Image 1 (cartoon, rainbow over the protein chains, first blue to last red):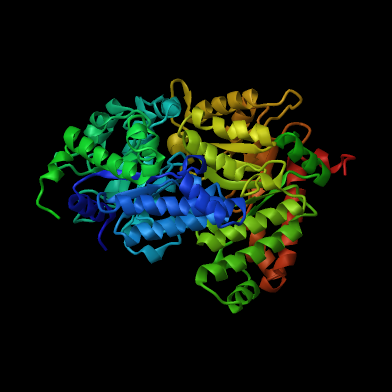
Image 2 (cartoon, helix red, strand yellow):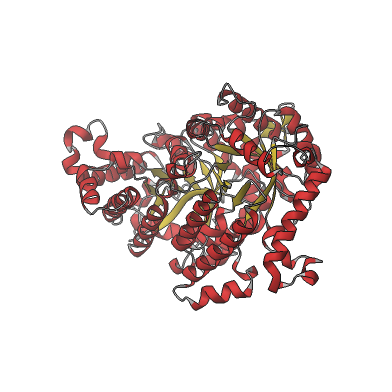
Length: 319
Length: 319
């Protein structure tokens, strides 16, 4: 069973970028043509919205797939729209896998004992997309309930070649409130990071440098990112907060090892709705939203290559 | 708009018990007759399982509805089985509302900004079951991302007469690892409790004693429960850990105000699969699983009435 980090890094080396594209559909922001088509086909409101989300997300996948290794659907936006929304999510995740993309389900699940096992079984498909109802390669997980609640996720992840990304230091403005509290000589996020590093060591295969247990650390906090990378050198990082949330490629740079591996940097809104961005709006407008999405992906890839160690991937021989 | 706590307490006074019945279906534990019927109807494995879950959950609801005010479906068990599982969850939640039961969705969601808004919009139906795809009266929420991430939930909860229960001190063995760490002169769970109390004050209607923002505190930690009740006197509590997890009614007693209100105590496995319990197994066996469920509910109601302030509800005039 090839581990998650190994599969991820193979794809990152092939595509020569650690850019992670979020899939965050919002009805009000969808291109008018997509909303019109979805509405014309009729049905209940949730079915119309789900149809629009599916079509839009599939188009984003088609545009992104030749250029990036991995995508991250935000489960909340699909879940909001009920059964039809969840059906669309499953279709989108399956399509991503068929396109050769890895899928990180951003669901931030977490619970105790057998309940955690149920979430893990439902989401951590890993190497075989048919192994779970929601065919993710990896899942984001919330650690508040305790290190024992990460075990069912880490255990199944190792069995299935899947991964998890545990929330350590999130990208939102209020992240510091609990995560930065000084606890017993260190910060709360440091305590969580050490637990994550221990779980990563426990569940790492003998032939892997990076294992199946990763961490989420926001690009909006470059100092903490540097500190946490040093604390968890063999933990794959998922770095949100780039782009719309204000984080830059320079802010994210500390996440990477010298070979350009070890991290993925996410952009969602800035890519999905690129034609609404200043500059892009004038150049493309809604009529050329696909072109705007394509250019924003290229811009992100170039930006990460220029300001982080991921630049070495560009010149590598792997294809 | 009648607030969540007011609606909850009206029902608790009518049913004269704060017993909360969890809905936690697991395929391997379902009565053989339910598994056989579900299998005979055919389809994919997830459809068969979802059909069994739906049938079993609906029977539990029918048995419980005359006796208790509120039920708590565990979302993970449904989510594990994909779109069919989520369809079953929606059917079960709608049926519970039609039976006059309040529904707490145990989904432990939590995310930042507009993503938190999407989860809130999807789950917090509140007073009008048609207001959200998943028609919950209240939702469990994880606080790790920060107090700012609770705001979208609390805000919408107040608008819709819905509630949230924020994880403060959970019932699992490893809960202490992060939640009990001493931070800046107090414990982490105390810091979270104070943030919850502040949010509760902010979003409480002028005519309510208890507001829409509640907290989860495990019965397995009676000392912390006592401390937290004192710290959050006007916060409705959801107390898990009773029964199978080892918590007793005496352990849960500190959650209640003198009038028997202010808390609900949950039992899931001990009720759903009562006929598998020692004593019950001999008396009922699988053939009389419905009778076992009914008796276990009566036993729980009597136990809470005997060992907690909820006993005063039994003698109240309200019907």
